[in-house]
View 1 (cartoon, rainbow, N blue to C red):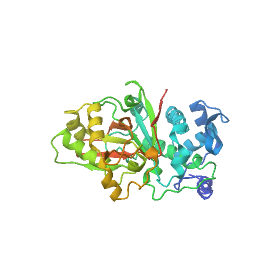
View 2: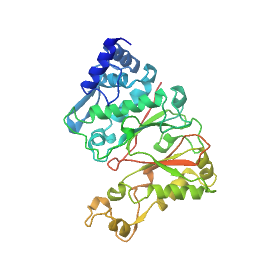
View 3: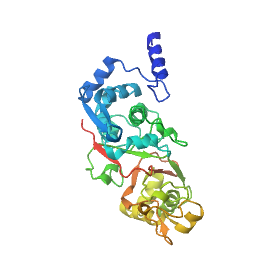
View 4: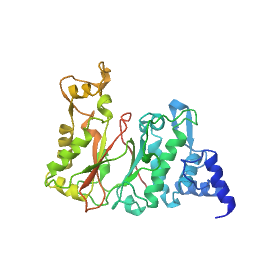
Length: 337
């Protein structure tokens, strides 16, 4: 690496063209190569953030892909992912500036996982291989650069979490319950990338349960714990991450739909308890759908509870990833290559 390149890296950091970590300088030749691989022209408008009157051009996204360290070979994933990020339902501006401080979670499923070298075995929520790290970083750099409305807005995350650097999970190529994306209407054989604004993963440890029910009860307690953000708003969602040891127990007793129904029924707290703790205001807004004297779910709909099969055996852990309460849908696109 020449001193000139080092200077350019430092200039990027000093000018705020970074997420706080060193980036690959977006030299024109590298950006042009990325644009060609994706099939975009530099001036193509890939998406808009209407409430900020912001147009996002192809050159912005290609430069961000270069800066985050993505390989040229990832172009099909970057194209589909960019469309997800700029879909109005992804709410990228709100994700950037909310006090909740979520990161953009990227979920990759289907044959693309192996084709592009995503990690899905050991350490899948903290994978340090290039595909997971750079694709997750790309999504969150787009959030950082575009979600501020061209620099007009300010980040307000009260605490945030490390997933705001990079947050990507890939599913096992062969699953017991079917590919993750089949929960969103895609065919089993498809390759799909999905995004959703999400809080940090909550680890679920159950080393002594001998049944699928015992594992699901533990997961339900994690979903419905008193601090769950969405108890007030009542339209949150959760991704349940099931590695092999817990998955084997759960799938021996439940189908995916049965497990979803079990968790939806069990993950609840009484409105009285929530009120005593200050989790529900004295005069809740109508859209929060508070029914006093009932067991309240942090989920507005059973459809906002999904599962992904990933990770390695040898430890009885699973995880719950809560979605940001300001988001209504997971946004998905088919990866075409």
